Amino acid sequence: MKKVFFFLVLFIIQTICFAEQLNKNWINKDSKSFEKVLSFIDKNDFSNSNILNLMNEHIEKEALGFNLLKSKSVIPSGYLSIYFSYISYKDLPCEFKISFYIDNFAKIEKELPAKQVQRIKKNFILNDNYYVFSMKNSENYKKYYEYKQKQIGTNLNLNIPSQYQEYYDFLISPFNDFSYGYIIGVAPEVPYGRIAMTKLMELKNKDVFINIIKSDNPAGRVYGMEGLLRLDNSSKNMDIINEVFEKLINDNIRYEAQDGCIVYYDSYEKIDSENISKYIQFFPYENNWNF
Image (cartoon, rainbow, N blue to C red):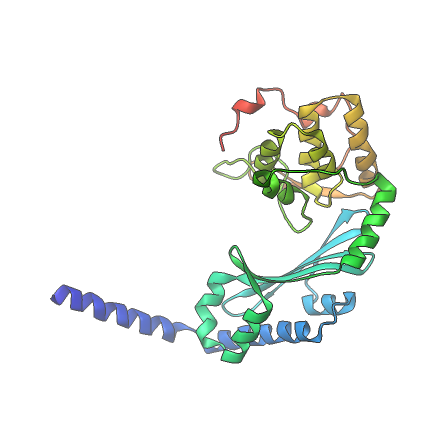
C-alpha cells in the first residue's frame, strides 16, 4: 500500500512540475503565431501577395516544371512550429496548406486562450500527425492544366483499385518531398517512392506510369519513368518519356535524389538505350525488396 501511495504522489509531483516547466514566454509566442495565421484565414483573401507575406521572408522555392512553383517556409515559435506549403502557377495561387504537429499542439492546448483554441479547431482538420488548413483554387489549377496539356497532352483515364490509390497519390502530389534512389539512409532502407512504384507495378498497367511521368512531382516522375520502362523497355515508351523530360531539361528542372546518406539534386536527362542502365539496374527486381 505504501508503494502505491508513493508512486501516486510521485506521479502528481511530476505532473505539477511538467505544468510548471512550460515557459509562458514560449506559450505567448505560440499564441501570437496562431493569431497571425487565424487573422489571415479570417480575411479570406488568398492572393499571391498575401500568402507570401504570411510565409515571411525565409521561403524555399522549387520549380516543379511547366511554370508550377512550390514555396515552403516555417514560423518557428515556442513549443511548436507552423509550416507553410504553397503551389502557384505564374503567381496565381493554386493550393496552400498550413500545418502543425498534433503532439506539439496537445502539449500547449490547455495553456492557450480558450477562444483561440476553438478558432484553431474550427479551421484546421486532423490529418495523420498534423492539424491542417487547406485552400485550393480550382480555377487557377484549370489554367495550369490547360497550359500543361498544350505542352505534353492530356492524362490518360485510369481506374486504379482502391488499395493502390495511396501509392499513386504519393508519387504525383506536388506537396510530397521525397528522393529518387534505391537504398537510402544509414540503416539502410528502401525509399517510400520506390515502394510505391513497386506496388503500382503489380497492376501491369503502363498508363499508370505514363500519368505519373506527366505529374507535378519531380522525383515521382523519375520513378514513373523507371516503372514504365521496367514494364516495357521499348523505344515507343522512351519517346513518351522524352516528350516530357526534354521540356523539363530545357527549363532546367531538377529532382532530389539520394544514394545512401548522400542527398543531391539531379537534372533530368533524355532517356536512350545508352543511359537506361543508370535507372534500371540489371538484377532480378522482384527478389530485392521485402515490404
